[in-house]
Length: 392
Ligand code: FAD
Image (cartoon, rainbow, N blue to C red):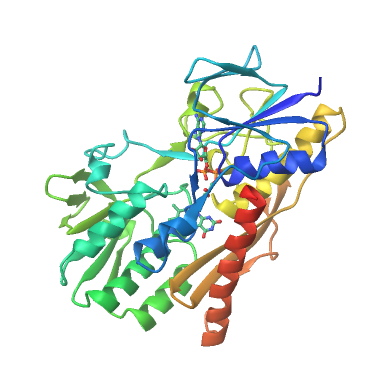
């Protein structure tokens, strides 16, 4: 019988990896285990919040995985010694090698007052689906003149430019529909991805609407009270009409119980094979992994998935894996027809994925409107390409 690779998590990382394994070596047996029947994608979900896009456009099924065994279920435990995963329904599946791609979970122990119940009042919307619709509906129901507060976590977290794209598109919604309203970003950092581009665009498109409070001005949220929708910072407290709390995160829960997460909550891996540094035979890709300089993005997840698949195919055939070069590009929409981007190239160095100096960059600070429009179109093309690569 051919060696079996079991992939846990059918998101951008896991789905791309399962598919790449089949493309590289038709003789491998591949099983993809996913707990949900449909995948709801986060990229472009900020456009859903702002009423610019339907959530249906974010949804992908698991019907198009020819030659891959799809198992719908939640992995409850991993027996690394027996090379076996245990599912919620009590069934087990054996593997020659295991790929864990569980994404993230919010850390409900990290921010006093913020737990799963609080998230129903102060949504994080950092996993797309019901949380996205909850935040969208709160924005819709808010009166003109209301205050929206977004709290952004310290690094590392899923999608570094995400909170600021979100602020931009919510500002677009407010400017168009509720122009007396205000948006405050309480930040646990003093700087953020594409900051100069975002801030220039905010001055141009949303003057006076967005206030960013960095760490050094007391922006870090230390406690929340869902009953009064209050966010407490080191210096102040803010009462919100709509509060979007993006909490600190860690690797998806299964990573910890499988023994592949370290004390940071994330998973250290070898940058060539993505094999866990803590549990041989288990590989970790996507947001859950410590990607070195690579940001936690769908683009990175897909790139890591393909590199990991190539390494797995080599390891299972007792060949030497080749060190990869990985690319990431993150597009953000600041308004409809206004896109900006950041790109980087990465390779293994000193045990981590390091950025190749000078190989990447951001959109120019002063660009014509046509350039921003083109980048918004590229963003849509990118989404079509990556989702068809991952989900067929
Ligand atoms: P996920 O996509 O979260 O997939 C993990 C999967 O594993 C899920 O389907 C989950 O159900 C499943 N799973 C977890 N545990 C188990 C278990 N025990 N058993 C079975 N199944 C399990 N990235 C970009 O590149 N570009 C963007 O424009 C962009 N925009 C974003 C905007 C927002 C608002 C957010 C929040 C994120 C954005 N991202 C973007 C980031 C991107 O969504 C993530 O980096 C990406 O989803 C990571 O992929 P992943 O496969 O590691 O995790």
